[in-house]
Image (cartoon, rainbow, N blue to C red; front, top):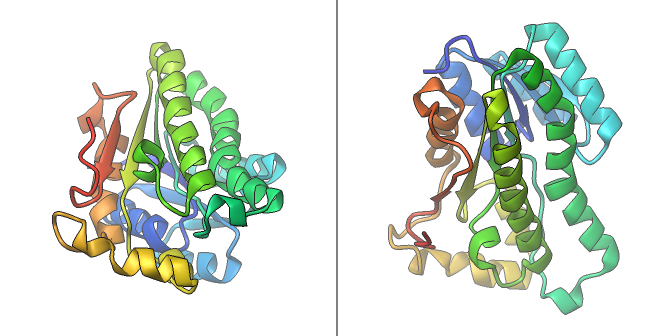
Amino acid sequence: MLEGKKAFITGGALGIGRGIVEFFIKNRASVSIMDLNEEMGLKTSKETGCFFFKGDVSSLEDVKRAIQSAIEKMGYIDVLVNNAGWDTIKFFTDTTPELWRKIIDINYIGVLNTCYVIIPHMKERKSGAIVNISSDAGRVGSTGEAVYSGTKGAVIAFSKSIAREHARDNIRVNVVCPGPTETPLLDEIKKSPLGEKIITSMDKFIPLRRLGKPEDIAPIVGFLASDFSSYITGQVISVSGGLNMVG
């Protein structure tokens, strides 16, 4: 399915990112990951065979350095998966501008940075697939995640725009929107009273009656990165157990 593909995946050390890395490696892609968590990044690299580069997606210089190193290791990059993300659950009026900036920098500026660096490389090769991980929060909003929802909505609009701009370069851009998914980040979110209240009641509202798992998300990312989806671009696909049945 992904044989011969060379993928660069952000936030690949844990959670959904780790699930995507495992799926890509299993399907015979070469993978480089960028993550701020050095301990888990090295562990993932050792256990899966991917290349690991430490870096912060919100830093353009870190992104440039990691992508250049990945190209040196793999020869080229024809798949970009923007998975890195972060959030905490608080009502908007309980947040601060410092928190807004952190959420925006990781979830939106990080996507701009990687696309800004990798798209010219893909244009040169006249080939590429970008899969941006957004969230159903970006499609319909989410209590306690106002700023996060805004960044994920921005990722969707940005992705559609660059899909239009670069279709002529044979670069496809699509978006995957997970619903609540069992990850270390979700465990962190549940430590706050509001987070615990929202997350622990979520499965009652999900038609398939359970939270997602990283292995639920990875296959659709792999499909959109593969040649099987060569006529698909600018699309947004939810993987949320039917929680948000939006068109």
